[in-house]
Image (cartoon, rainbow, N blue to C red):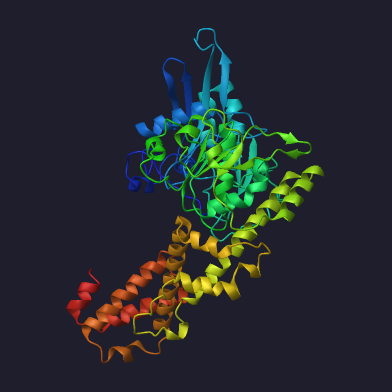
Length: 554
């Protein structure tokens, strides 16, 4: 996942707010801050007036009415959960975690009818760096509630000195006397990499607090009550099935939703997801209507009202407060949807879905034994993440191999002809190929793999995966064609018997390929780009002056 970074004045808005993205291009105050956060908000709850946005910093940042309403409703309800949406656009974060101070403060106040006043501290960001923002809020919140606005100004000024969140870079981020050392994830990362090590060189800064990840949650902690159903949930995520997650707290609901969507790595999650969803959300009516099929979305909620409202959804997961059964966490049971009770629904996974793959009993036994022996949770998480990663790899590798076979051979690409097309993906041909090149080569799990692939073909994840791979292959094909042109012996010889129209067509195509390559869309070497530019100049030089003037205006 490459990070998104923006720079520019606070009024320069992209998807958030109103101003055009072009305004952001110019360097301005808070440009570095903008690369990490949109703004910091303080929300006050009043029993009579409801939630109110008390403070936004930087002060000239403007939220739209819809954004402001969403922030206030989420923060007052969540008081320490991850609140956001998985669709492209704004990600809103109001976070706390075990061991961190909660960014919501309640203070007794006899002058208030409710008996106390309540405030929430909210970070608004486009970046899904949940773990980083948890740590950041844990540092900021206690100081803010003691010192109020001056503290926010100082913190925002410090963040405005941070380096840009460049993918693949390990950064030191000083804030409030602490240095957070983080590594920004990148698309080229392998799903499992060693956590960043503490830098050993001398520095005037304090010893950094190393965050193993800016975005990955403690998977084992999140999945504790559903360990026996992890593979069923993995299949539901793979197929893009609608899933309602009802938990006792916003923090638990948010973490479980984020853990679920992360279990498909390295496959990109292409559906919508809302870590914390309330009845005040603008899409409440859309998601609760019974006039059409439930959308492909994972919803995290805390209000039992949703059990009644979304009773028609095919899959509902309700978890309770973490409880131990002896030395082991109490597991939710698999239940039929008909057993749902609108007022007193017990914890369970309510679904009529039958898993295609057999459960990995060895994994479950290993995890539960680790609990009994009090094995470190990061070790348990690593074991669970490795299992899910290997499962996803085993599922995807046959698709990748088949897709690669659709690519035209390099020898079929000739310099002066349009490159051949990528052959179409034929599902029946792929399913036949599984007999000798299926997931059984890399995975010991038995089950109905064919049935799982057939359902996968109908999911948004297949469509997303296929479009991305086809786009990458098309770019590779264009790059190979450009290389073939640039490796041709003599462009002058080719032009001798060609019309002006054909030469102009070559110039335009080469220019288009150069634009693509310079935008990092084509995987070509610098020497190839230089040769292509030389060919363009040679071809233009062979044309009449009037055409040269058209192709190279002054």
